Length: 381
Image 1 (cartoon, rainbow, N blue to C red):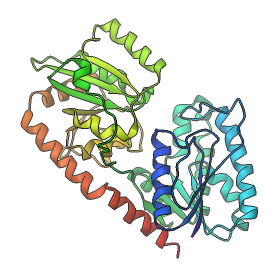
Image 2: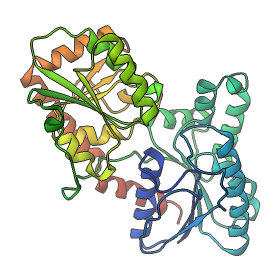
Image 3: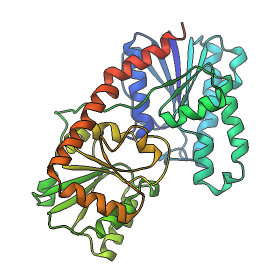
Image 4: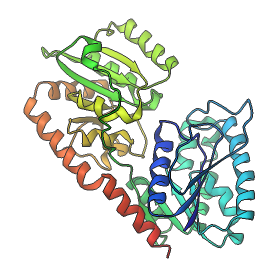
């Protein structure tokens, strides 16, 4: 098939959605489809057989896109729409695979498109905007009506997690909707990886958090929880990821409460080295405060065979349980109690880590992803 994938993000960059888009387009090309990828002006080019990357025009003010809503992204999406118009006029696509908000302008052309429209629902835009921005809180019903319309008029919905699937089924039970979760990425043994223990000059138990340092990720919860831990076990916590400004903010907080010796920020590391960093640790942390989408890192956490400690929110509990992870309530006291339990129980760490690894292999491998995606596209024919 000839497929147009629309990705309203910088591509390629090593962060959640662009990583997922890379996997999607690479797999579609592997299935011998011809894929055009329409995306933002910013990002690194990737090369796959049958893939053509088409970017919006570049302007000096359109760069350094941050995660979430912004005026800059609105301007980029307008340019995306203009470029999309040109593409659909001069090309005949069997499928338009629209990611996130690009579904709205895609559906404007539905009467003129001969192919199918897939809505790749990576999140609930209505919930996301109303929760994060005061401007949109009073508009939630209107935003939900737009979201419902997008679901109703799309031919197929591709959904990243069970919570979103339940939402779609609540709106339209008969709509063709498919789960396509993220995957546990395989280790790249050739990736250059630093020795965390050497950096820390430490041989005890090591816990690790990987991801951005936005407030919803719960880094303050992690720090406050560590501050309450009382144990004779030697341990340290390493944190990979985050912008320099965020790292400076949390380092100042660590200084204020006297925890600089326990927690070390290592900055950003290459995505292809993730598995190698996970292998160096004993405990993996996800203190996320809220949300419905399962963080992409959880799948790789599980695949590492190391025990995962995560908040008991729907983002996590869609795939995690007490059988394959250590879940705790969103409070520093609960963090401290669970972390102490993990530190002091070698056998339970091993049992839980192994259970998580089995889950990742069975349900969230690259092979499982390819089967699911092939099933979605086979349903079009």
